[in-house]
Amino acid sequence: MAAGGGREPRVAVAGATGAVGGQLLELILSRSFLTSELHPFASDAGEATTVDIGEEHHVVHRLESPAQLNRFDIVFLAVPERIAQEIIAARPGPALIDLSAATRAPAPAMPLVAPGLTTRARLSELQHARVFATPHPAAHAIATCLRALEIDSGFVSAVLLQGASAGGRDRIAAAIEQSTDLLSGRLSLEEQEVQRGFNLFIHREESLAQEVISLQASQLLGRAPQIMTSAVAAPVLHGAGLVIHLPAAPKAAGRVQEMLRAAPGLLTVEAGEPLGIADAVGQDAIIVRVDHRLEGVALWCVFDNTRLAALLALWIAENLPADSG
Image 1 (cartoon, rainbow, N blue to C red):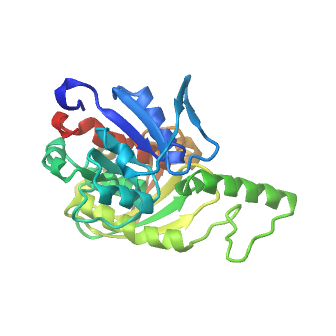
Image 2: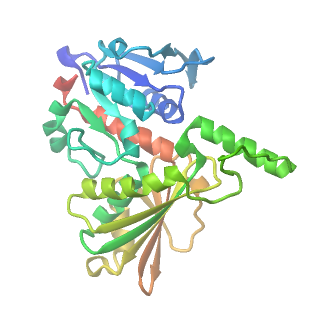
């Protein structure tokens, strides 16, 4: 995407010191997305005054006001929802790509778009909105698989296993600390604190994610089956796993592997091949194993949730019309 006048866009990443923000910076610098300026911002810079991406050092600016973003063409909002909403309400001028939208239900005023599910023509039609929402990575994975298999009716269930990276770097650090304390026999939890190390559980965050993921997947598909999603926090640091249970689909009988293999963003492995969440960390693709059952089909999908979230946001920026900056 080029800004007006043919120059490359001026880009800001708000939340650059977070897990997803760091991935965004890495992808922007490693892919062919050219910028005339790239500025990392943090709502709370703390001690981190620079971020290192490869051999490059970038100064992190403290974001104190939405007005600081006025001169940019594209701004990625990899910040908590409260801060993102303040920036969106201020309408500073650039095209805003809101990654915090992944945690809430779709809103009519903010188009939910994703590669393989939203055409470039549709993205061009939506450019007047000036604010674009990225889906939850699990919603994108569900919708991508269902679209590939041409399933648009019936009932589908999905179970998401979320790693600590879904909660950002602080959650990762907490999981490491708790796991270390458990192994040392000295774990002491505060009141209301949840044991994240060596534990599977559903808490408020997972309960909220369940409905949001189903709603987002349905909106991305347009015509969709009834989707029921369960989300569980898993004791892994990075990545996520997703089991999708599908009824026997006559249209896809015997062709499930072939249809998934042809879908953009999916990488299939042979049935029975070992596949863990760790295998997806650092990978761009959603890796899928197909298991045929008497009662239908089960898809075991693993993906790097922070990297996929960043890729979904960057795809929007790469495909915005040249005059949208």
